[in-house]
Length: 309
Ligand code: RIB
Image (spheres, rainbow, N blue to C red):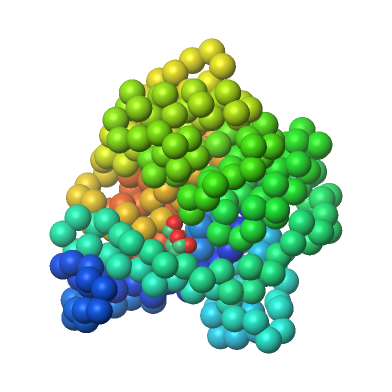
């Protein structure tokens, strides 16, 4: 089968990961037990995960003319991505400060988009033909909502499957939902978008139905260790999480899941199978450290799906 063509728009960030037993309280200093530099940014993570999972991926972003930006370009080259990045003179590349909980593998993130905060809708217009040539378009919200909306509009115009990962959580204009073939929030993002509590599966279903009424064609709410809930016009179901071993680091797991959905849909899989593929990809990623570095290859995902990992 030919490789699905994905177009991902979003940001790159240099991840500065501090592992510790607990988060510092305001005004407090705590000593970390470990430190790691890694490659992050939700868009870049999703692009890399999709490329490793077998897709032909183009990635659009802005980076600065600095060392982090040069490392990002080398990374995308190594990972086989088609970079559509612009280097913005005098601007810094994105960076993220990440606390990683040594006991649970959970995390808390502050991200600075750097040069990517200057991306505008008109910049997306310049890559319309690349979006049009794709099977699936994916975007998040670490750059401006205008950029996400323009990308979704162009994907809809050209009949490309459009996926919005509304992360980080933001209030969104009502007209964006009807541009989403798939909207894939986690619990806190679904809660912010609907004003409803989203802690249980049944609360996730209620919130997903609100997002359908707002115009999204399909909704997937990711629920961490409870799995992921699909809600569409004709069906609602829960996919169990996949365990590939002990969870040591959840950074980027959500990005792996989004990439898995995009690759699965790009291959023409039914949504249930695309979600299984995505859950397997994410389930492997949490057994490894880092965001981009934790993403598995297609062979690893296929072996795990076949029960041989
Ligand atoms: O989703 C995880 C990512 O969010 C991290 O890699 C960090 O860079 C932030 O963008």
